[in-house]
Length: 86
Image (tube, one colour):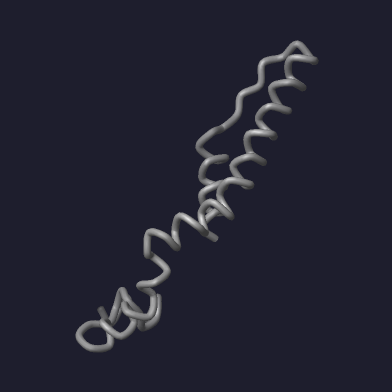
């Protein structure tokens, strides 16, 4: 754990015993199901809608040009995930 502590600091990943329990109690409310539902509905829905709108526009523009456009879903969904949780 000493190596990990030097890289990520002293927190839930590297603490144990009473210190771990104290830190866990502090962050526990952030993972309560009602809190997650509320915060995700406020942050995730608009971001997902933006991505869908972008994809629709990309398809529409490609159709106008008579082209087929590939969308790298992996990179888009990774970016969306980071945007939601970040």
